[in-house]
Image 1 (cartoon, rainbow, N blue to C red):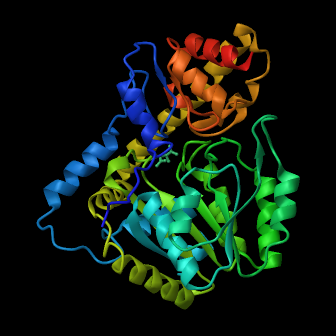
Image 2: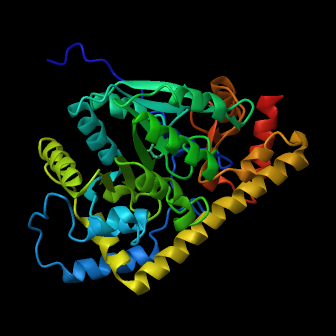
Image 3: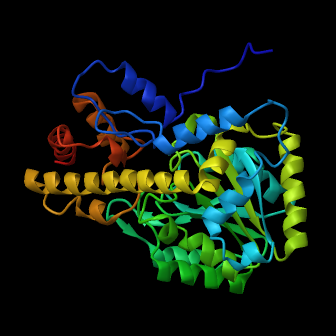
Length: 396
Ligand code: LMR
């Protein structure tokens, strides 16, 4: 059966973690996979999460199946977090949620759902998260990339993006990143979001928002602008939501597909298909992470503590951005990396090529993804000089 099965190359992001772990150089710098890390390189369990987990475990009397849409209370809690309790889509009941195994699981559900209803293509601004295309293609979708960001010039190509989006029709889907664009860190402004939503309203295509870093740009409310504005102004929206980063629940695989329908009945119908797809795939999501999120968001003391911890994590990444830009400038790179200070979330793209990234890894032990995606969590006072020397060396 498997005589001709070839050995595949490791995943471009996950494979890098193994390479880094195997590197024996003490000066190595990990700017790879998108996880939050402290200066010590640790991805801590958030205190509110540890306490929420304790409460969940204490209350848990059975491991019997949860309902098909996930841990009780999770769907409502995550919709409230994303949309806000007073949002019209919440009050009218035209929003519904299905827990999924992480943001990836939510994207897989969305992809299969869109394939099932006959979507022509999913259009994504380039560059995008390296797993978008394989994941959504495996779900049966056809992907088309359009210009979004110029890494060499470090600018969003908004006019080109808008032109491409203006050509979409009612059978198309536009995937937009929630706050903290992966890999560029270059988000649309609220005005630009308004423009894209207005085009979607006029042209009738579906907007799918992939939100994996909610709370890491400005704060939970500001970061939700794109979701709330789209859900308010468009009849139908899908949101794939990840709790990996903002709750630090990476390995618990906790996410959601949020469905905004034209009315309550449409949302319920679409949800029934999402559940049907999940049943034919993995039956139901792992409950544990969803139960923890529901416990945190349903307990005022834990919710407050979680918000504070998340804000502190986001602040650390912003401080690291500043640190890198200042060190680069002091090192003689002038303003070449100054754009990094004004971008959002964990990632930015260096103005490098794949060859230069390979040279940074091999010569200097600096690990970046693809053609130069860096996770700012890996930067700190003690390694920033090594990092900017490596960047300056390969750029020279
Ligand atoms: C990343 O982009 O590094 C993260 O979203 C982790 C992943 O699954 O790729």
